[in-house]
Image 1 (tube, rainbow, N blue to C red):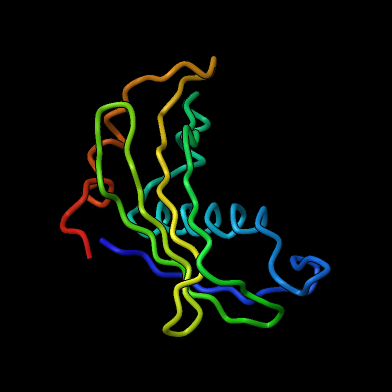
Image 2: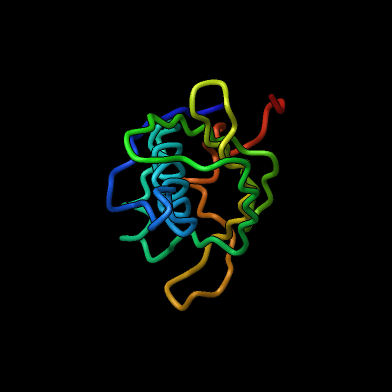
Amino acid sequence: MICECTLRVRTYECDSNGHVNNANYLNYLEYARYEFLRSIGFDYQGLVKAGYGIYVAQITIEYKRPAVTDDDLLIRSWPVKKGAVSGIMTQEIWRGDEPVVSARVTWACVNAQGIPVRLPPAWDHLPGLKPEAQP
């Protein structure tokens, strides 16, 4: 399953060269991950209320070309690996037919103390968390 969402670059997200500041791509990717979870019916707020969370354990970003103010960006997110406690997701940001960013995100489920634990059954069963086929 691939989830797609869009956003438009805002002026305050750009640096003195007029390019999106590299740190802002983390925000774009986080927004898209949340949209991915929503699209598969993953109740993140319910997970938090139950005393759990999903944390990013590692993220690797490859910057391919800059985005600038008013660029319309498409963010694609999909799972590539799923274990009992953690998983890996690939995310890409595109401007039209040009790749802007490629990222690989490792996530883990944690309890209220921040200790990695198995994803609770109510959330673990969602088929969208498991990779189907890579695009």
